[in-house]
Image (tube, rainbow, N blue to C red; front, top):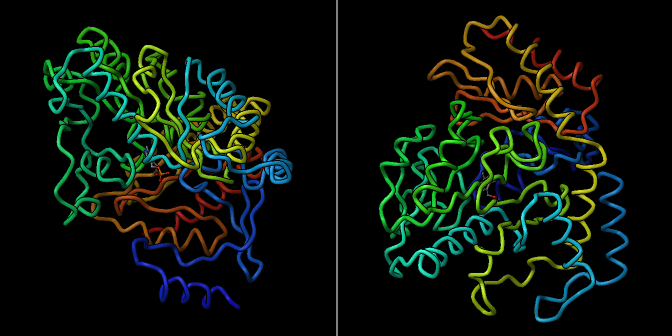
Length: 400
Ligand SMILES: *Cc1c(COP(=O)(O)O)cnc(C)c1O
C-alpha cells in the first residue's frame, strides 16, 4: 500500500474531526520520521510536545517491554508494585507532595477543576454549586465538556451546549483582569504558562508571578496547565519556574507518557489533594503498571539527558537563526526553549508553507491559519538542528 491508500482509508472510515497534513508516517526514531515510500522528515511537531524524549527512546521502550512481561493492568481496586514508585518519582521530579494519575491531558484538567471546586467548598467555605473558576481567553485545555466550556474557539464550541457553568474568561496576559474577576465564590485561576495551541503566546514578563501573588492574597488556587509546556519543553522542567510562580495544582500529560502511552496526572500538596477521598474520583487505567513503568523511564530520560538545558540552548539558536530570515510575509518569531512559533501577517495561509516544508523534509503544522509552531523532540542534536533550520530558512525565503 502507498501513502495515498492509507490516507483514503482514514478519510473513508474515520470521522473527519481532523485535517491532517497529507503525509503518512510508518517509522520513527529520535527526531526523524519516515513515510511508507522511504522519504525521511524531521519531526517539528513532536505530537504536540508528547514526544519530548524523541520517538522510541531505547530506555523507555525497554521499560515498556520489561513491564509487558510482568503485569500491565490491575485497576486501582488492588495495589500493584509499580504505581507507587511512579507517583514518588513524579513528586520528586515536580517538587509537589502528592500526585493523582489519569490518562489524557483533558482528564488531568477535569481532575484539577474537580479538585479546585471541592477545595472551594471544603476549605474555603464556598457553597456547592456556586464555585467559580477564572480562565483565560485563547486557552486550550482539551476536548471534554468542561474544557470546551472554558474555550472561546468557535470550532471547539459550536453546537455542543449546554456548556458547563462556573467559568469566567478574562484576557490572557492581564493580571489585573484576573484580580477584577475574582469574587468570594472564586476557587481557582486556571491558565497555561504559555498558550501553546493559541500559537505559542508568551505572556508579558511578571504575569505568572503576579497571578501567583493575587491567588495567594485572595485565597484562590493557582492551577497551571503544563500539559504542553511541561517536561523541559520551554527550557525549564516547567514553564512557571522561569518566574518561580509555583502553582497549587499542576496539570500534566503529553510527554509524561514518553511518546508511548497516554499518561496524565495532577500534582499538588497534601492540603489540596486530601479533598479526594475514596470513591470521589478515579480512572480504570489511571496509573496502571505499564503506564507507571513507562512514566518512570520517561522522567528519568528528561533528567539523565538534561533535556531542559538542551531545550534552552537549542531554542536560543533556533530563534536567533529564524529572526534573520528575510520573508515579506513573516511578522515575528516567538517562544521559549524549543516551543516556538513563526507568525505571518494576518490572513496569510500557512498551510502551503507546511506543504513546502514537508516536500523539503520537515513536518510542522499551522495553528490559527497564519502561525506555524516549531517544536522538535528535545533530543535533537546540534547537527540535526542545523540541518532542520537550513530547511526552514530556505523554505521561508522562497515565500513571495
Ligand atoms: C494537549 C493539551 C491538553 C489536552 O490533552 P489531551 O491529551 O489531548 O486530552 C490540555 N491542555 C493543554 C495545554 C494541551 O496542550
